[in-house]
Length: 146
Image (tube, rainbow, N blue to C red; front, side, top):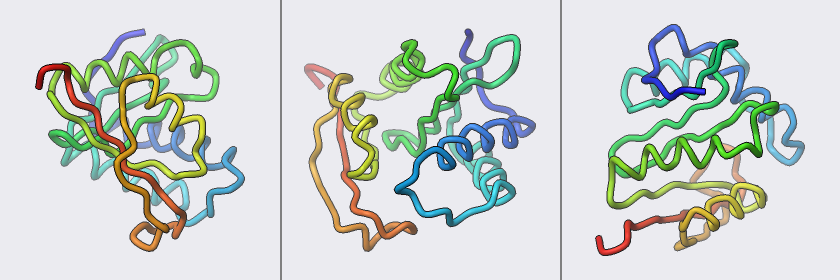
C-alpha cells in the first residue's frame, strides 16, 4: 500500500468508499446519492489536501485535510483494521501541529480510533448544525510540546 495525492479521476472511487460506509451504517440517514458523493469528493480534491491509500486494485482509503481541519477519513471495508487509518492520520499529523475534526456521537468505532490516536473530545452538539441532524462531537489533537 502506498500513499499518493488525489487526482480528479479519484473522485468516483473515493465516493464509492464513502458510499459503501454510508450503506453499512444503519443509523445514518441516506441524504446523498452516489453521484452527489462523487461531486462532493471532486470538490474536496479540488479545494483540500486529499491523500489516497492505494494498492494494485486502486484506492483503498483516503483522508481529506484543509490545514488543521480533517474533513474526511474513510477506509474501504476490506482494508479496515489493518493500521491504514492510522497511517493516513500519521501523514496528516506530520503536516500540522494541531488537527481538529467532527464525527457523529453514534460512531463509536471512530471515536475509539481517534482516542487511541491521541484525539480529545472537546465539544458535543445536538446535531442542529449538520445536514444529518445527528448529535456530533468535535475532537482535537495537538503534537506534544506544540
